[in-house]
Length: 174
Image (cartoon, rainbow, N blue to C red; front, side, top):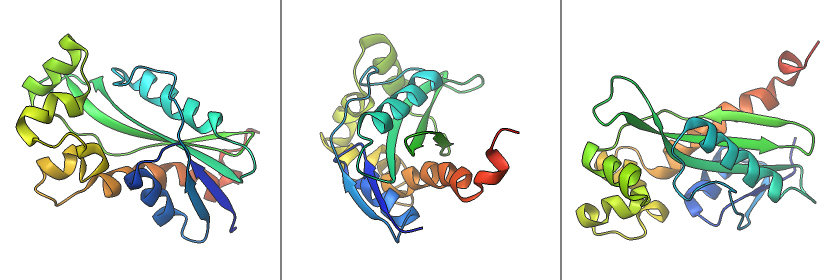
């Protein structure tokens, strides 16, 4: 099934996550807009952003992948929200969606995102002192002391989307 995949990002974490999930493919990153807020605040918005990115860059490739992170309301959490990563893979006809594991940011950082309209990276800047943390280990890498980095976190969402590609017959409408 070798071919080529465009990733709707220049972030090496996202590009490398796709490369690891599709090792026999040629993978390239392309800048793309999500069409949603810079910091999505609902699961619907996260998914919409991933789909928009994937569709925006499709063309002259077998697949395009849009990856979007954001926070969404989750009952029972300290802050009221958790971070989700969505991968949308597009083949020109169908969208294949996958979500990665979710985790909660410290409530003070989440409050800044929700109430002040800043991105999560901006909310964490006073704590991490890393303005480009999303292009480095990611906040997940910082919070876990390096046990999980952004690429590996993102890779889970890509793997979940690939399930539908690898098992297409099980997902076709009857």
